[in-house]
Amino acid sequence: MLGFDLSANAVATASARGERPETSSAIAAAGGRVEFVQASAIDLAAAARVQARSRELGGFEVALDSALLHCLDDEPQRAYLDGLHGLLRPGGTLLTLTLTLTPTLSLSLSLTLTLTLTLTLTLTLTLTLTLTLTLTLTLTLTLNP
Image 1 (cartoon, rainbow, N blue to C red):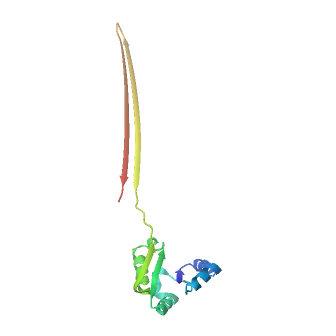
Image 2: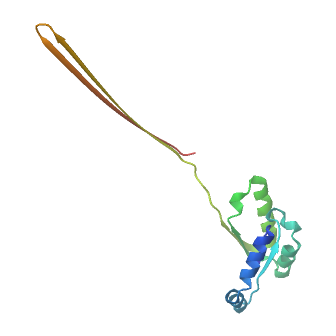
Image 3: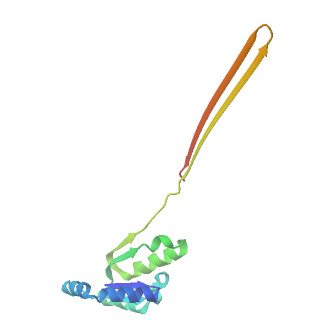
């Protein structure tokens, strides 16, 4: 297994985890080894150790992207995917963990209007008029692009 990251701190952390006895023994028992190097995902052609290990193996059987692809804009995504494609052996597999969000706008509006009017006229007759008007308006708007 060969892992890479642009961050030197991420590489150091991953290396330390890979050296834990429970991790290294499990990998060794499976006939493997683990290595982490610093490299740019969008310039894998310049990643000498990544390229060398790919050649040693005749190409990687599997490449795993863990939540990087969706963070890149179109041009860097293309560079990253092209670089990974060049590292895989024929018939190799690229697995990606990619998050997507579908923006949703939801608006809810509620309006209640109450109007009370009382009019009293006194002559020889009394007129009382009470008008109560209640208007409830609910508007729900959902936009899905």
